[in-house]
Amino acid sequence: MTLALHDMEIREEAREEGREEGREEGRGEGIDKERIFNIRNNMKKLKMTAEDAMNFMEIPVEEHSRYTMMLKEETAGYEVEGQ
Image 1 (tube, helix red, strand yellow):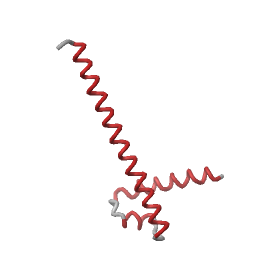
Image 2 (spheres, one colour):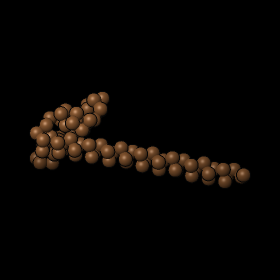
Image 3 (cartoon, rainbow, N blue to C red):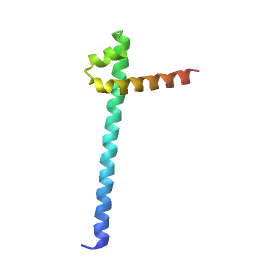
């Protein structure tokens, strides 16, 4: 195998690893957006607190603070847009 061919194979492997990392990150963001949507939906329709909605959805307790922060950030964005 020539050095140039070997370098091309290494670059292609690195590109594919980068693509897979991007796909995984995108899936994670999609899951987070869906959970935030569902938390808000439960809060509104079932008159729940965010904590109750997360418990209802069986979101692990160790993830609650992260979603609480995301909810606050999302709300802050709406307040800015509405002004």
